Amino acid sequence: MFQFSYSFQTIVAEVRDILFKPISFFKKLPKTQESILTIYFRFLTFLGFLYLGAILSMTLFTPLDTPTPPVSFLFLEMPLAYFLASFIAFPILGLLYMFVSWICGGVTNWSRNFRASTAVFSTFWLAIILQSFAGLIHVYAGIGIGVAFTAYIPFLFYIALTSYLEAPIKRTAILLALFTSILFYIQYSRMASYISDYRMIENMNSHKPLSREEEEEGEQEAAEIIRKAMEKAKSEGKQFGE
Image (cartoon, rainbow, N blue to C red):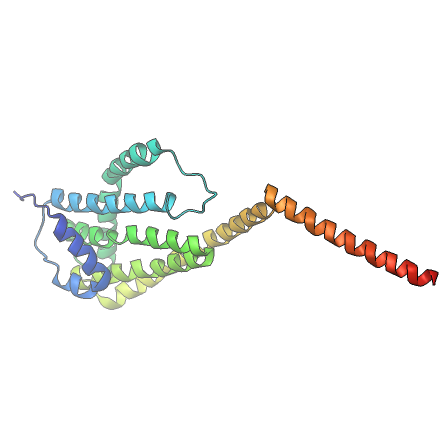
């Protein structure tokens, strides 16, 4: 029977190691079998980070004229939905890793595959925060961050497969190259529609009603143009009369 263990500090340190030194992290990751409950609670913590990232992207990292979702949705419906989704996402990710590891010729032990999938999942929240913040600066900056993480996640998957799940390097590289190409194609398809929507919103914003101050400035500029035109017409009339 496996014992349940949980340490938030250890989990935070794990996130740091995966982000900054993923190769050494997966090489040193213990290959002993863990309790499914221990791995699930680790996954649930990373899902909580993802939830916080989604909250930031919908509140702080949105344009000023974008409406904010209601508080009940952000702090009641969303966390409940994330928690319920964990019962589906956790086994699907673990089984997906087992399937890919089997194709690549790696270890198919459920504990190690679920452990690897949870470790790679720990970086998803950072992708949401960085992409939302960069998108607030400019749409192409957000797209660039999205493209970078589209390449970084398969890279982590490759390290996990070859270092921790002991899959052959060549076969794994070929498979993940195809997988990454598909991801880039899907992202490119979404990118075209996203840019189109962004330009449409920009055009709509450019036709927004003017404020009272802007109307007054426009009226003054128009009056000045008319005054100068009338003075020029008078001077030209006098010269013609002479």
